[in-house]
Length: 485
Image (cartoon, rainbow, N blue to C red; front, side, top):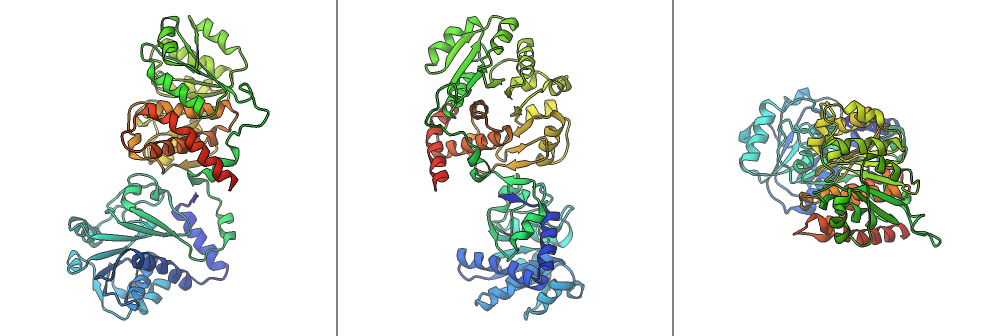
């Protein structure tokens, strides 16, 4: 589940060599799983291996040799003159008995499978020259590409594309990198295989990663469980502020909170909205609040253990006042949608008001209204969490969950069917349900995002947001089975 930056992976390689595995053996170990993955997916066919000047190119020479030993027709093209190779790359190039061609688009002629071993994650600038021209020509021809480590031109730490082309398969070693999950990298990598190359477990402990791929193993032990002596109050009481005349968003959030396990869920609404909400809800309670004083009096009830505002709440002063009132309680609070956008012109007021556990769930547009952060998605989410003091759930097909202390989780289980109106409201409700039960905000956010994606996957095509809450019991049953195994 841990994701390593390019620098951390380089550190891991150095520590592995220091442990007694030579760099030559490590490169041999890196090439074997690439060849194996090719054997498992394709029948023998003409292969062109594109090699760069560094370790990635050395891996490519290993792959080429292993394919030839298995009887495949293989050619190698090198970006630099052969005598410029050094170290382990030069050693493995010396074991290659065939000719080495000069890299150019012309070398693609006759090939049916291309192995991209030019740069991997070792490039920190845009792809250019013969490498860019050759890969670009392969893309135009729609050739099948296997990338070693990452597609050349894709930034390993960020997923930013600076000239990479689509790979059908990417084989990386030891651990994934952020680019394997962050868009557009996740799409460009195609299928991702993580190979064991003999790196000792002790190396992982020394690298100390702080970025992870979302997986139940990260938070399953902390997921709230119903105890034999539980009652509705011990399972938490979630409070949602309901907007009007837009009522669907808050209703979906409230149902999601209940399905996520909150023992009680209440929606607070203005008196004019009471009938509209009450007619559409059964197990979720509805209570009227006439004004700000009435709302603050409601918050005096300490039995409310989790608070949510934003879905359908509107962009006026009432939303702003109720956000600040919720935050003042110091209780776990989820801010979504309008509760974020209403502070567009003075985000510092919002950040200063955070006095307890807080989760913000912005999409990119809402994020930009509050944070003037540049860079890649992972860096922006981390900076926003640090500045605001809240856990940031920066939504998308590659949702990033970032904690103020620098930890981050990237989610990868969300199907494209989640691109539907109201899905974000349901996600906010799931977060609320877990927070109301006392779960840690960072882990609750990660669990909610994963459960949200799993629920959508269970439903399949034709999904609309209101389908999601009813999929959660099945997801939770599956998680219970995992926990017992």
